[in-house]
Image (cartoon, rainbow, N blue to C red; front, side, top):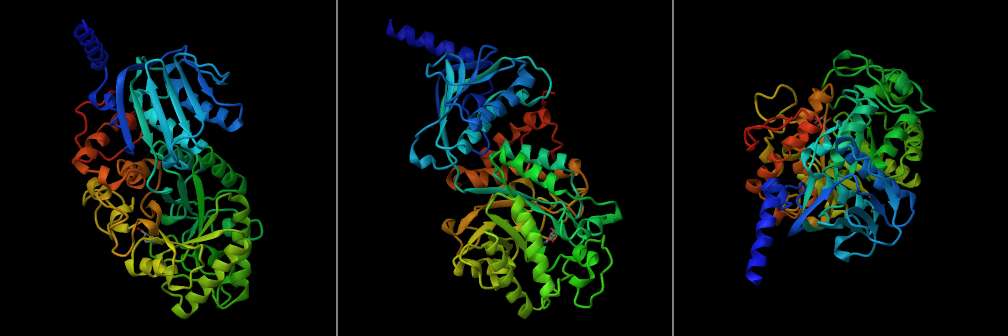
Length: 520
Ligand code: TNX
């Protein structure tokens, strides 16, 4: 008797399971890979009777619920509503709850329980709920991401997921200086990175070829310095309202914006806008080529520091996050004896504004403030100098993590000065062992930069970013012992349908076992 019951149970599980691909069935398709997935019996079906229920009436939780509803409603057509919990549990609902969970889950972790009669997501913080929501999205069929009505069924196999990240900083950088990207483009990029639980977008807002953020006290920076871009076409810039709008849009996705004003090199756009920033008092010509390392603010002039204080002051006031990025890279025409005191003084300016410095690895040549961070991109020696001074490092090794590096010699745009980065090379590295002397305790997190000398629009951006980006997200989130290319490539292949649904024009690398046909 007992045995036949068990048999019936088994049959019904496998019957339910036939409609669901094996990868989704095990919950193992999720990127970044969760800490633990424990399968259970049965399947949850999302129907029009489902509500999204949040604990308490907090506006933030209601907004999180609405974010999830906004992802589920267009494709299901269910018009799911969000409501505060009345304390009772109703079958079929998705509950988003703030509550005490295993402290190991930390600030961004979550516990997700999927049962046939409902989904429960619990986290200590809203950021954890947001991360769990991304997992729910990925557990549903990929067509959930379509913007138009689709037919179901909308099922998730029963399981429990416990999950939390390795690093608190998981990000991308976008160079909007070499080529300008509109607010709508930046928002789309924010949407795409949030699906993979990334929580930082660093915006490279100024360079030789363009100044991209309005500064009220120095209006010519954008009027003149923002007027062009690489190739000589019209440039562009964000007004302060637009920048604030980006910051808000990012914050709604638990993403921090880190603004960068690159100093003292990479400043030709500023030097062309204001003659007084030049040692010879003469404005330079606007520059639309792609050379680096030829410009420098005049480090010996007081006006330079007034300029920096006012520029960074206006940006700091618009930026809720704790960091201002001061660049500091490739200042080849600034003498080292000028560069060091310059960086020291700028760190003080940033601290006086109540912010902390991030700079490219060269800033470790100066005397770092105890709360400054070094972003490793090229020289391990520099990064090690930072670590010796007690600074934490953001890992952006060009040879592994630069999204502007070509996949191979046939890639139509991008650069290759740091080598080609096929998808496995982008994935197969461990931030905590890459540079001897820099271990996990020295690392704040991982960032994948996209420089845009050769990237002119979203189509090109997406081709360079995908399918490498989910790998960087996983490097930042999942433990090294849980990461294997041989297994990851199957999960990545499983994302193809999602990329299609989101209309991401990805590079179809031959090294990934893409499904033979990806449903439209
Ligand atoms: C080096 S990475 C640069 C950028 C270029 C990039 C191109 C860094 C801190 N500086 O100015 O755009 O290479 O890959």
